[in-house]
Image (cartoon, rainbow, N blue to C red; front, top):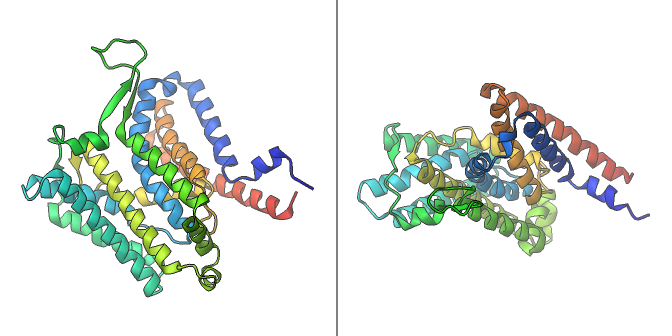
Length: 336
């Protein structure tokens, strides 16, 4: 018997995160109306998309059955490399940007090769890579942030982090309305691309099949090792792009930037409905998970909850969403 539309919607992995996001917005807005002010929304978007870029790539990687703990260190490493090369007059900023991305791709390639060729668990490989990359950043800078505040006259900075206002008053002399950074546009474009790849392309089918049963996928002709290596490289690339954007926006390239981001990104992906062990992924769910965690961080501060309590809420959300996903999975398998 065909299932009802409501039943099919409830079965979708994005259903739980969507309901939670709506409830959060309602609760925080009712406590403090500044939560939905244009100024606050603009600030949320500026911070959110940087971690969001990493989460999009992590969704594809986790769907294939792997994950990457080195993304936080690559986040800091890319900015350090770019600004070290530029501030030392070794090369212009656009070329330094490309070098930072290329080195990050190489980091992802190394992780992918170690995981696929030597059959070392990705947890161990990327944990080791985290330490290597973070240590390299600290060694190159002696632990000090790199100067990044002279990016204003660089076209690459405008392309990545330029901002504009969606005005509502018509007064051009004063900034007004919603402030949008170019990084938001990049996030939207990359999210659309990742969603299309995952659900509409042969490569997306390969990703899902690899995470579901790698041996069966390999027997059907799926290049499992190649798929995983590409996804590790994409994960590092997105972490590097996010790190560069952050360094330009904050005018600082700190070698310690991104510490702890890897766990927060994995939490975003898992909350969104992607299976931790692979075989099922959803970009739409990840976007919901991204906003759940970032709105939670912003909202608890606005309502007066100590910021140090953030991890308590996040842990509770993760446990609750895992319980909900498990219930929906059992409900789906039972066909009720």
